[in-house]
Amino acid sequence: MRPIFFVFAAGAGLLACNGGSDTDTVSTTEPAQAMVGDNPAAVTANAVRDTIEAMRGGSRSDGSTLTLRGSNARDPGPRDTVGDAGAPLEGLNSAQAYAFQVGKEDFEEAEEPDEGLGPTFNLDGCGGCHSQPAIGGTSPKVNPQVVMLNKMVKDHHSTNKLPSFITANGPVREARFVRNADGSPDGGVHGLFTLQGRDDALGCNLSQPNFAAELQRNNVVFRIPTPLFGTGLIEAIPDSEIRRNQASAASAKQAAGIRGRPNVLLTGNSITGRPNLNGNDGTIGRFGHKAQNKSLLIFSAEAYTVEMGITNLGFPTERDESEGCRDLAPSPNSEATFEPEPGSPASHYPAVDGLSSIEKFTIFMRFLAPPKQSLQVKNATPASIARGRQLFSDVGCALCHAPSLKTYPRASMAQMSGKTVNLFSDLLIHDMGSGLADGIQQGQASGREFRTAPLWGLGQRLFFLHDGRTSDLRQAILEHYSDGSEANTVTRRFFELSDSQEQDVLNFLRSL
Image (tube, rainbow, N blue to C red; front, side):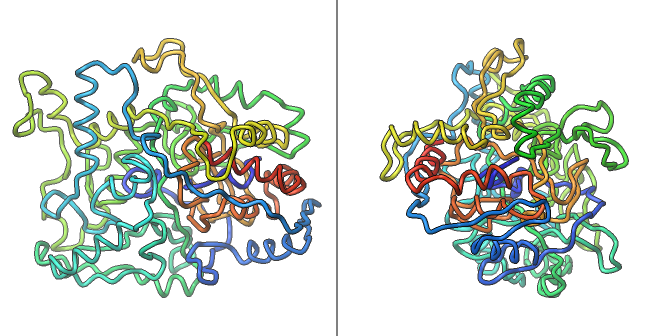
């Protein structure tokens, strides 16, 4: 299923800037996607056609129809409450609390070329992409990519130009090319910026990709950052729990056309109809917009090199080894030193300080508490939010956005043992149809499949869907109705609600 409001911030996922980048993506099954109107989001021509048809009462090849009427229901907008996200898990001991703080500080730090930044990158720090509503979140209101470029030009005489799809008040984005120039599948992340022209990286003459030409070819798709709150608890959910939930409510899912499956990361990138399991151990991927990453450590390592160009113990070789760009910092750029940071209480916790950055990032993410629900939604009453919660289940949203899953009864950390994780996701991948298709295969997830995005923390997010194409929840719901989407039946049920019922559901979503 995965009704519309459910693939936000999404594109689902990664660390520094997107929510889990995959550099080994090699298979493309969908058409290239185009820029549409004033919204620099990647959407297929079919999606535009389908949206127009839906507005006036259209149909899909699967026989589903959607007739929209005028409605007074409105997205209440993001909550401005403070303290709902960004805190560490409760119950950390002093060593764990210190490790969380060390990881947080490294996560927030901006990097320079002599520390490994580049030669291609999307931002110079993890915290910029993951900062709404607090560190560890998602894309903020003021785009840090624009701020960073202005600073590079002013302080280091950078010759980089801002790509047309990056705007001051738009979402943080990474860009992927669907196909190579010869027509073969690409799917990889193409860094927005390079070190070219910087006075602290003299000799690196690597040009930015020709985004204008690729946009003209309808060859660019986007991802925005996924929030990281509560990801340690998500990592502690057993595969058996995901499969148990997958098998639940089978008749209701079948009636709604919901066929979600795990993303089992298998070798050969073959589509077998099985979950997306790891290539070596056959386990389920769960991080990133397509559940393409198995663990937070892999998630961190991949993002560090893809989003910031910093090689590390997980990805030790440069993505681009152009002459003059490779040896600005020792390789791999981030390494465990086994030495305490200057000024740190080395006598107490030297091991934490000596870890590599990706290990510190992983600790920070594992210890991040889940976001809190709040009833302080604009113009909403607690009664409306309660009704919306029931309607959310009644129309079928909860069939994919499972309200909760359980962690291991005996996790390695007591703070994660036997916990109910209220993430509102089944962690499965679903076919979202032509309207959201991005043409990129990752693991077993095809160009039309995305992980059910966890909805906790939704109330404070600013941009929705994997590419950030809208900031309006109701529009995000509509975007999920397209040819072949598993969300069509549930989406239609939502738009068949009365105005007041629609409003109740939107109020509930903004309470999360």
